[in-house]
Length: 294
Length: 294
Image (cartoon, rainbow over all chains, first blue to last red; front, side, top):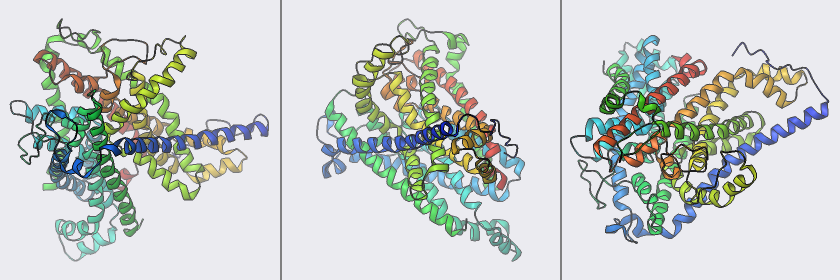
């Protein structure tokens, strides 16, 4: 960055008037781009809300779907299934992600941390359907689809997100705190457990909520691991459970308008959950960062 | 040390995913060899399988997304860092991030039921009528599913990713440089073109590659809006399939031979995804503030 020598001559060319007009046009383009992004968000949100409105009712949230995909019925079984799958995925990804973050920030020599960080970032960018196929290969072939296979696939998607969020919070812990504990003769591990983790608890949790919001909407990892299910309410995680993303996907591929209406309803439920979780977590994150002093 | 096990576990996991997916695809790789990549027919009845139509679909849909998303994202990032009034900066910035939080399956549902019909009735006929002499603007699709719709949906997914990385990059350009250019009498746009863009060029390239990685690997939303087809056609309004969408759409109900060919597609997708991500990460590392903190 230091070698930021201007590539374009800064010497004025043409008339000032022309330069000002070009400047105004480009400022207008930038503003238009920002407005367009916000407009797309508004259009998508509003059309989901408007089209979901006819489907929404108390029964929609508390009843299982009608058998044979008839009209009426709700998505309770999918809500329960999604909660179980995402819950199990979080239970897997959160501890492992935090352990990775602790190792990378507190213990690892830089030469070791760099390749691990690279692996995590690449893992984060991997097409999620490939992750689904991987879990299909290790857990589903020779067995059957199951909720826990879906949870394992989602946990792989969550892992890099959780560990990155935890790292960012851990790095904000003032080194004075760490050194004070070490100076009192406390071992490094006790320092981590007794001093560092409690200070960063809030930040790590908000990072976890962001990862949950992402995982709740992921469909591709579940397509190969948890997509063939009976629509009834069930909590048996050794079988494939109905879940919201796969339900929206399947219904959207059907020509039946009644199923489209159900898909919009489920999409609204999912969107509200994801947006509330991610906006809430971001607000909390900003607050906990300020508290740790940055 | 348990934290080290977790951290090295993530490297191991990445390796395991690569090994397992290639292992799953091995029967097809063994049978068809590298000729699979250049074979342009996918016909389960005649037992001929080739990846070319899907590599083409992936390339074209991602290209459409990047061509539209790159200027938009850079415009948004510039607006947020240079132009936005203090009060709305945070709000618009968060809204753009919220755009990234919309689950892909919801975006796909919106794409197939709202955006697609709009394109089929308005934009595509207009483009065909006025620009139809260019072969890519062929006859509009009757339902609004096709490569173009997929490209637009991918654009919505890519813009927030590229915009947020670019925003970070632009914030890192030293103020002295920007102020120096302004003090020399350049307009704001000349300052952007002469100082900010050249100084962050490599970072922008990495951001675009990361966006590309996302576009290449998106399975669900693309499956919903791309229409499904195995023809290579210059008409971007026609139905097609990407590597990821073909796997998602066809795996259920395929016989074992077609399944192993689909897994071969997954292996190709994995390799392309790895290349894009490693490439982008290696470039982006130079700008990563986390790295210096270790």
